[in-house]
Image 1 (tube, rainbow, N blue to C red):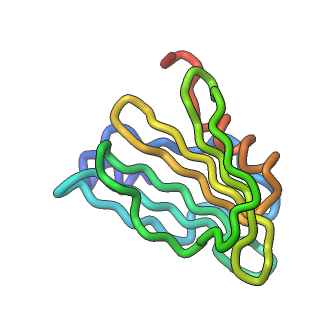
Image 2 (tube, helix red, strand yellow):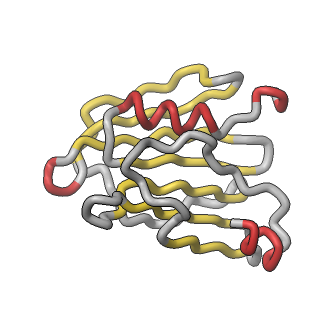
Length: 137
């Protein structure tokens, strides 16, 4: 992450401070660009089977987020709610192999941030909450 920050001159990379047990650190893959606009994609794998189970994207507004390896195939619930001074969209459903998954996304002043994970909603929210600096809002 520091190498991406330094080489691409991206000052702000939003990362979680909480990671559930069972995820490998560091990220298995980081894809990033600074031109034509800032986009960062981090993939984290499970220790048990090396399967990508957490993806975090950060995209300069108003650009669309990148295509990712985890896709919600069936959305069971979609809600917008206040989230630490922001408005967040939370989607919960089923991904490939009928695994429970969800996505929470919100806007920071410069970026759109999304956290997508093969996990129960409570874990996804914990990760997202740990990414927000309460001092900024």
